[in-house]
Image 1 (cartoon, rainbow, N blue to C red):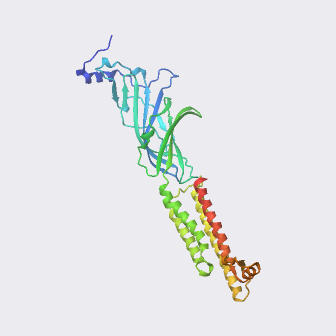
Image 2: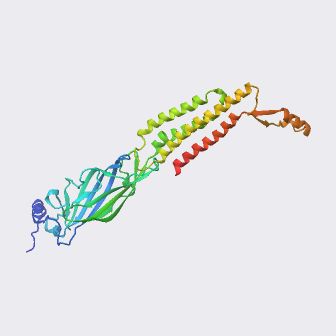
Image 3: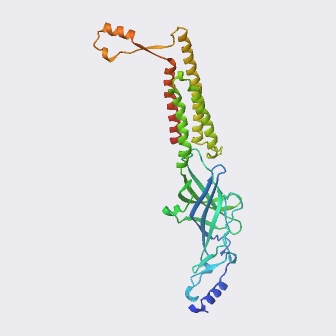
Length: 372
C-alpha cells in the first residue's frame, strides 16, 4: 500500500503523521554496527588562557552529524517536507563528552533541537562556553605560542565512531575579542584510546599566539633601561662621591620594579621563562655593579691617600706627543715626551673596563631573551 500524498494545505497534518511514523530510537541495526558521527568545531572564540593554572576558557560551536537510514522519507509524499526539527528529548543522540574539561564530567548538553533531513541525516548543534585543560610552555614568554587541545570522546552506552572535521579557516578565525591571544589556526586529529574498553577520540588543536606588545612596553623595555643604568654608574668619576648612591638607587628601583611586575608574569614552575631568567640576570648584574663600584671607590681613595702622603705610586704614566711638535728633532721630541706626560688614575681605567663588561653583559642577556 503506497503512502498517502498530502497537498500543501495539509502541511501541518503531514508533519504530524510524519513524526508519528518515525522510529526515533538509536540507529543500531546489528550488534557489531557502530554509528558514525561527524563532529565539527567552529567558530571558536578564546576568552582567556590562565598560564598559572593552565586552563583555557573558550566558547565554540560544535555540530554532530550522523545518519539513520530508518528515518528516510520521500518529501513528495509529505507536502514537500524535506526536514523536521525534533526536541532533543524526543530521539536518541550520541553520547559524546568533553574529555579534558577543567571541571565536571563534560557531556555535551544542549536544548537546541535536532534537525532531521529526509535522507536520514541528523544535525545537532551545541553552543558551549567551557574551560579545558591546556599544558602551557612558557620558556619563550612573552614571545610564546601555545597549542591547546579540545578533546571529545565517546561516552558510555552505545559506542560511536567520531570523525573530526574543520569547516573554518582563514578569516573565519577572526571571530574573537581577546586582547592577549590571537587564534592562528585550528587542526584536528583522530585516534583510539584503549584501556579496559576502546574509546574513539576526536581532538581539535587550537593554535594560539600571544600578542606581546603590552609585555614589551611594560616589562621588557623597562628592564632594558634598568640594565643600562647598571652600566652608566661607571661613567661617573669616583671623585664625585655619587657612585654608591647612584648604584644603590638603581638596585632598589630594580627590586621595586620586580615586585610590581610579579602580577604580570605567570606563576608556574613547570617551565622557566626566558623573561624570568632575564630578571635574574639583571639582578645579578646589579649585585656585581655594586661590588665593582665598591672596588673602584676603594682604589680611588687608596690612591688619593697615597697622593696626599707624597707617594705617586699606582698611577700610570702615558706619553703624549703634541701634533705641533713634529718639526722638532728626535732629541727635542724625547725631551718633550719626558716633560709632557698625563697620569691616568687606576680607578678610571677600572671604570672603563667595567663599563664595557657590563654593557656587553646587558646586551647579551637581552639577545638571549629574544632569540634563545
